[in-house]
Amino acid sequence: MNNLIPLNMLPIGTTGRVKMLLSDGKTRRRMLDLGLIQGTKVEALRQSPSGDPTAYNIRGAVIALRSDEASKIFVENMQII
Image 1 (tube, rainbow, N blue to C red):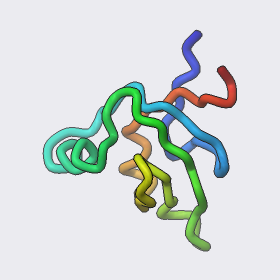
Image 2 (cartoon, helix red, strand yellow):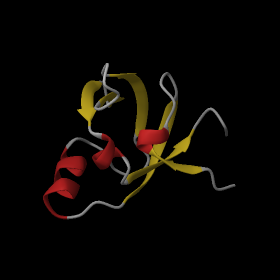
Image 3 (tube, one colour):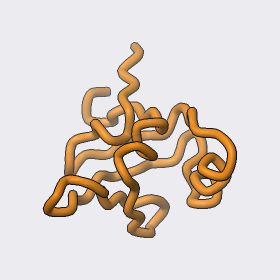
Image 4 (cartoon, rainbow, N blue to C red):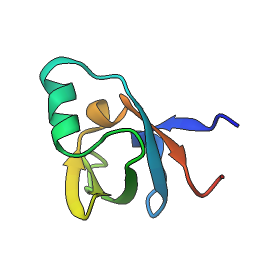
C-alpha cells in the first residue's frame, strides 16, 4: 500500500512517518540534522496565519518548515494505515 504524500500536504493534527527525502546539498544536510531520517514520526501542529511556514513536532522539538522545504520530504500518513 503506497500512500506517500509530501510533508506539506499532511493535514494539521495528523502524524506521518518519513519515508523519503528528495532535497540535496545544504538543505538535505539541515533536514538530516533536524532528525528527518527514514522512519521518523512527524506531527503537523499548526500553520502560520499566512499558511507558510508550518510547525511540526519532530522528535520532541517544534520545527517550522517552509512549504518548499516540506514538499521534498515524503511521509506515510499514519492515520490512513
